[in-house]
Length: 219
Image (cartoon, rainbow, N blue to C red; front, side, top):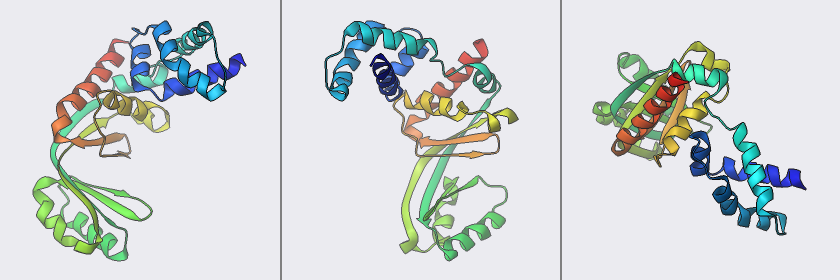
């Protein structure tokens, strides 16, 4: 039964960014966290649980909870951050026409910022906002699913080891999420992690990533 409390406590913490942040930064109050989690644990288990048991579970989980550790810390520390402002995006239906039009545009705009995220039924194009009117004309209006302007792209260039090291991208995403910034789109391109956010949140998102890298370098 203690094992159930421990696993449930871990699952609840894994879904709460504020608690994760307090554990990672080492300012967590274990008793306070246990009291916060107690109602959810009791509801799930269908019985009362002792606060002391929850405090023990929180302490046990906190010992191993460090996003920046081992290879992840090394890769984040060696990452370089670039910021690209004034980005736009258009999401369109995935059809033979849109695929052909996008490929043609890639050839015609070799030096421009032009990224493609291809899904099962849709394709999202990220590009310099100055090209918006041009890109808008290469697809049929009825094929457009969504469009947005005034975005920015944070491009994190990491060592080659990131390809085979799980958890690195998660560290970048969580750093931004803790600032309550919505990630519009994200993609990986070899060793680059591209995170697209609204222009209004550039300051918070950029600070979050640079602080993460600085923390990794201190370690």
